[in-house]
Amino acid sequence: MELENLIISDQDYLRLSKLGNHGLLADELSRAAVLPANQMPLNVVRMGSHVTYLDEGNGVSRNIELVFPEDADFKNGKISVLSPVGTALLGLKTGQTIDWSFPNDPHRRLKVVSINND
Image (cartoon, rainbow, N blue to C red; front, side, top):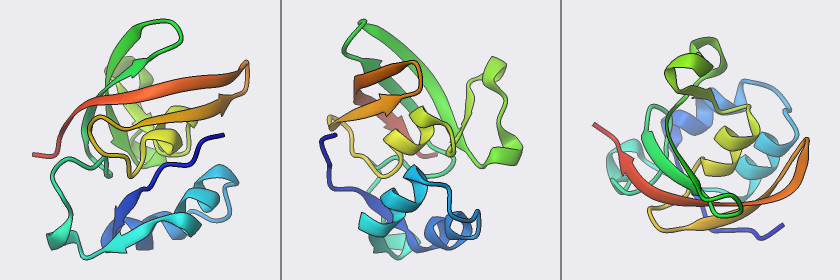
């Protein structure tokens, strides 16, 4: 699995770290650069981001909102940070790609196409 640099706001880090030890998320948090929320670049996927990403393996593009588990609603594109896609995208910048393992498809390459953090 290719490791990309990732950035997380201090506010997101505090709330995410309270979710407990959720394997891949815990790994991501352990290697993240943590910045004050007011210093977060606009082109970084964070909690509440609306993200367009491309699955480079199958060419499918999706628009999602990254949310905390209690707000997840797959039908409406609200993807939990604890899902494989949510964990993979957290902290990436526009244009970054990540190779990620999924339960039924061991290796997928996801690319962040655009981010809206309004």
